[in-house]
Length: 296
Image 1: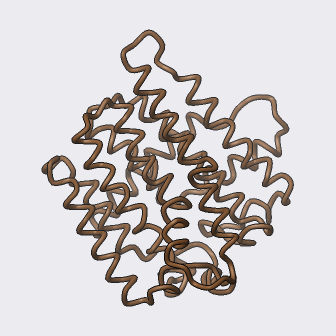
Image 2: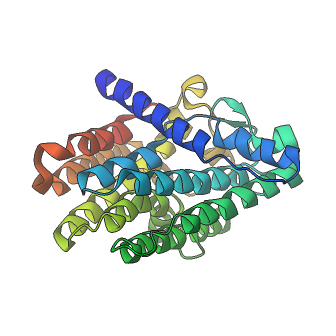
């Protein structure tokens, strides 16, 4: 695990360099740009863009295309975190070990910073359409996949159901819906958008879809566990928020033992789904293992 985490940090730094290159620019108010960059450059594991870049490599995609999609995807993820931390949502004051955006810039500016990152992500992707090449259709399909994952039938749907379920009786079907949409949609898109843009065949897409579904659920389950057992210093955000808000989580519905058992099961599923890629899938398999066993 230590060897993998060192490699992940190197790849995260590569993502940080990409984000610096594509950082928000223009003539908007300085404080708005500062608020956008504050959260975008706050660090973190960068799992989603790292997954996108690695999947693109695995499927033979162009690095330049993958970098644009990876930057845009991380901007969308960052916007969702800014809004998720707002008092009207999770009301959190700590993210990635730093004060949350609204604590530093105020609620109104935090909303606008998130809106700005979401809009700029699509501006960036649309500016990079490979006109006049065979890549244009797969690229646009990949952008559509990201849009759907971020939208009202994807991540936003999960967030809405998460709010609606607070304080309600535990419901396994609703829990599955929340996990598949709130966290799983964007994580899956990071893998599948890269594969689609790279022109992956149906066999590859099927394998990667199964892999993405497994790690998407595993990531949220690990978050559920960390909210109960995590170390605030390692996790970088407030612990116990889910329980305090009476949120619907896997441990609440199934208990901690079954949650940990499910994580082991998902780890195996993720590895088995990539068997057809052979040794080339090493990093993706190790990423699944990290997601399932992480303590931050």
